Image (cartoon, rainbow, N blue to C red; front, side, top):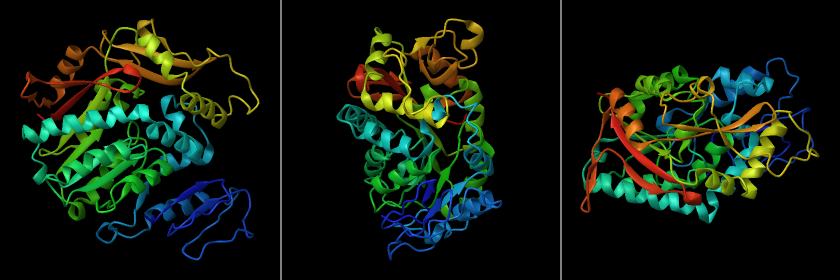
Length: 392
């Protein structure tokens, strides 16, 4: 699958099969041999005074949505996100800093490809079956599946492909902070599924930009959206739940749905987290984040327990991340820098909080009573719950 836009930061590499390529480096790479099927190649230098504008135009001047079918993806990226990337100013980022640059995308791709992650795909298939069987979502009238934090798209593909059994004209719109993640997702989504455009952005901070793109393209993509945030991304948000819910309301229309999964409090959480961060790829993800933020050099040695997440005990610190007293907030730190926030919820309390902001959809199957959440196991034995809701 080719892409209309592919972005490389400071990498003198051109990938075969990409219809347009932008390589930003320290100098013009005149000696690079460009494959014949790469069109629209650009190679600005980091020192170019108009670099930000050139990158912006590269991502926003592509084909319009009605032309971008099956083999082309149009990228939209905000000025704010471009400036952070250009200036490499990641001081305010915590968990988000894990996804800086192409190397982090490659590491995360390996994490999602690991057999331990397969349990998440089985969980989403089971949950989708409950939704379709119980007719909890009228997928025949859903136009777009909008994925917040698409990752490499493998989990999303399992979801979207099953939806096409009900609605074969559904479109998929990935949103991620990392351009290469969207590139991976667009390759892993079934090629018969239309991707009218993608948004490269921080969906916690740049809500207005995402809202504007979706609204501006509404005529072309139609208006009924199924938003989803899978892979327990909700548990890794850097702000509080209510803060995020208030932003979500800006995106959603009266016929839209939102699906999230999140991690639950359970026995031996510390042990499960320890096992997670003993995994080589997770270690590489954290280590790469430190290098990209210029907190360590490539030859820096880190203590074997340096990446062990610990619960935040002080209420004034904990309240920066959650509105619920029952939530356990784990923080993974290197010296004084927070690398990761991971939350564990009490299922009744988070259901109550969601229910004060949205209409929770009751879930049921033939073997269980009606519930407002559905619990499953995820990788490394962690427990998680799905919640489906609409605007009130």
